[in-house]
Image (cartoon, rainbow, N blue to C red):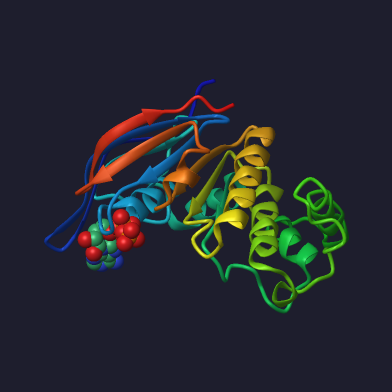
Length: 227
Ligand SMILES: Nc1ncnc2c1ncn2[C@@H]1O[C@H](COP(=O)(O)OP(=O)(O)OP(=O)(O)O)[C@@H](O)[C@H]1O
């Protein structure tokens, strides 16, 4: 599988703080990569830089060989909407919309008619164990169900890469295991790559590779064989 997303020589500074000190990373299609490391080591900065949310001060980010880091803001945000999906820790669903409309929203932002977008969105509910919850508002869902809706929303646009920042951070251990299994398998099934920040070694172990960041540098890479 060829490289989908790559960062080479990534540097990011905040005043006198060096958040990224020259990071190289490559992610292939269907590859899942967990980013771990101590608090303040640069994990979120690396994820956001690869996702085109933070612009690096040095180095390059490439999506299928196309540079992201020097695109104009409009092209960059269009590319993020179309080619990337995002799953965050919590609070990402719009509380006033039913679950199915939350999932349909990225499709509507891409110009799809509401009715068609909702039909497409509904297809994700059964595979993610959400059958029957289409009309629920986020406040009527458990934490694990809300994260599964967020996974559906991230996958609805059929992105090249899903970025997840502490996707299980607000869940108990059993729910966290269910959610990470669904996130890794559903992402792999679509052919997308997954890049995830987590503090939890059990969650990271569901990924193909784990990258350890320390003081803005990669201190270790490990490869798991996923069953
Ligand atoms: N917007 C910002 N302004 C100033 N400094 C920042 C900013 N964002 C991050 N930093 C600093 O950059 C370094 C890396 O931060 P980052 O959030 O990437 O770490 P992290 O590993 O994700 O931490 P955590 O696990 O606590 O979320 C830290 O020293 C942090 O204080």
